[in-house]
Length: 489
Image (cartoon, rainbow, N blue to C red):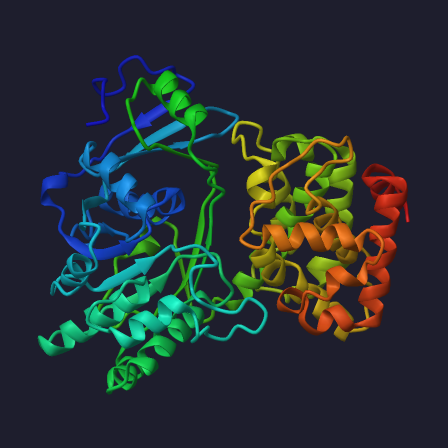
């Protein structure tokens, strides 16, 4: 167990600690969730916990699942805590911690055990957070990577799958054979059209397996899209110590997050769903406008502050947001090039949304690192920045700020800061990115020739010139002077 205190004993009045108001022994599972990381526990698990606290829907508890080594490590830590997690919200006005009890079990780290768990009649939803890059999707084209070795292995051995998606398909087949209806598949990853992406992957693999399982899935399985949002840094010694010292809780795997979360979901759950609207989830017919708003303003904004802050020597996001050059760059780029590409949403002020995001980025208590914002650029740039570039070019509008953002990413990928210090390029393509970035110092076009990232944009003359001008300015004058010139221009 993670509790060391009696209720509310020893907690500072400025901080609050809450525990489940429901009897966890009376919960029963309705959801299997694959990928029990920090975001899931701060977001989906937290929403369900709050719903259970209202006395409702206690048959929708979570069973965790995963197939990776880090899933096994998480399972081991959570088992010692009866599957509970401390979620600590880092509000500058006062910290709050919640003992989230909505998970009641964690399937063994074994494909067949997970298949059997998903095949239980009471499981009506399978949800997943397997990261943006975990869907076997080409980042540039959005098409399914049918030639991936792991996909080919599952396609040839459908009864002994190794991938998450092979496991899902096998569970659907097993349920079908048992006369059970299929579960709904709900992605909670930060992807445009995450339901569509998940369906593309599942259908792509099922089609390779042969038989009629693909047509069965097409006709019977729902894949609702959803927009999710809650800044959730990685857990390290700092976070574990913070939870322990603030609340005297001995949690081996706590989560810290911002005091903000949002979830917008398409209401497509044929086998039913928990009444999450009672705890703030928005159910809509079309989530795409909300996704676009977040992906371009928030996720794009993270990219804007990431590489500029890194090159200016900042360690944390709030330090970057305290630098007038970073905030000036962010605000000008958002309002001049990024926000104008986002369609209006009835009842939503995009200006207010931006200012709320800037406030969230500046939260010093969160300790969100610039290194976290910089990771996986080869996967994130094609999702969060380049579609905005393409839309601006199509409309004949300026892309100077977006080109500068891309140039800053290129400069960052040389692996050294302007003071000569070295930093890790945390990306699956790190070696190629570094080699290409170094060549781009004398030939900027080399960077844009990475067709798997830039696609046709790399051949667009307007973008090529703006990118070259920005990169040349960074190398000639430095990041600080280049940002100053852009802000004043």
